[in-house]
Length: 292
Ligand code: GLU
Image 1 (tube, rainbow, N blue to C red):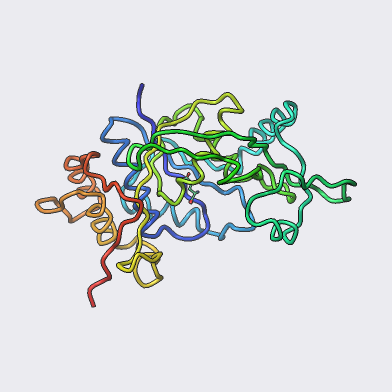
Image 2 (tube, rainbow, N blue to C red):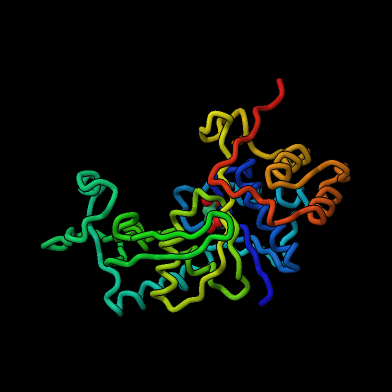
């Protein structure tokens, strides 16, 4: 089967080193396999969206010569598809309304108690949760290895549609990664814990699974999430080469002897030198602090 990859940024800020790793990793895997590569803007959550950031991310990808094969897909155009999916899960009694407030949830810890169902329905919109029961999801991640996730203990009955009508990332991503044209998901290992929920939803909806490869999450030399000064600063679209070189090095690509004068030349050389077998098989990856 032909390989179809994707990069799926949320428009919550500019492209930074961590998201460039997912963009370049997914692009390299797709191109190395002779496949296509798409960009999906995950703008399902208007309150979290930073105005202008979708355009800024797309501009930076272009500056890096990361050209998708199709126009970007905006999840905001897909509300009808997500609503139909919830309607079909409701028809099968696989989801239930939940009126828990934040403080109700806080008293129960992070997992939702399946017993919350209000005796009298309050006069406000509920969120909709899916019943996970005793499902255990198993899959093999190309880099992180075999995975086994009991959903009741790791996710609980999770939200598919919030009370404010916003469809949850888990639902939108699960459906869109089964769309024709996606066979392979390459993304950061911070999303590994989301994958079982997405596999579970596709199973309920009768949709096919893509293959998964979760790249290490970038951390500083102390193992902490990147600070502003190191890698969470935006990649500069006017000068993307330093960030590209850092990320390509982290992906196991030897840069010696590569042309590094333009993003296009750097990508062509990197693609020729890229060997998926040399991708780092760890959950985190430390990036060196910038030279002072
Ligand atoms: N939109 C998610 C993010 O930017 C990533 C989704 C994905 O790659 O599945 O964190």
